[in-house]
Image (cartoon, rainbow, N blue to C red; front, side):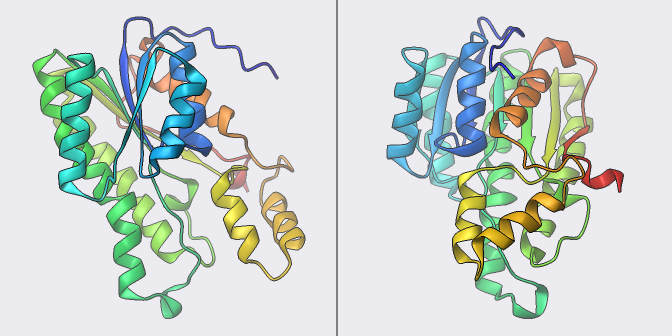
Length: 256
């Protein structure tokens, strides 16, 4: 399948959190290929820099910890300084967790929620007023199929992504008259650096990978670019009648 992008974001500006690797890196690249100027934000400055440099002159980068109010404020200031306006906010930054409730610690639970849920809240709170001032915008939250179903050993992750899905709906209904659309994407298992880290922790990485693949009726893992193309659609005017929705890209998991 070709990675060529045809949908246009010409003249738009975009902020992508967690843009240094995996799905966020693919979204940053696809948005730029579609004509947007992109600010790549990541807690790893080196990763953000590499992504921006690979894209070229239409991209810039910044280190940002979305769980920190001060860091998100600085991200917003940087975006407005470089662009003057932000048309698209893609809240992609997230972390995983591999525990059930009885094995979970309050510290890890809070850490997962700080990035996955609080991070989305802080970024939306920072950028929504700017979008209102400039006449509207689009928010794309990267949730997960784990926010719609219960997955073994994913207690904090499932709960945090469920929060993102519900917050997406609340934002969509609250700011529709301000010209802001807000949607989320719920990927299934995507072949990304996070999955690589899960496999590294497994007793039998090959067996664990086979189990993850078997979960999808399509018989394979998703790719970051498949999610990125969906994010492009949701962010574009092609999806102008779409708000408050959860777009599932899961290889058929929910169809079972």
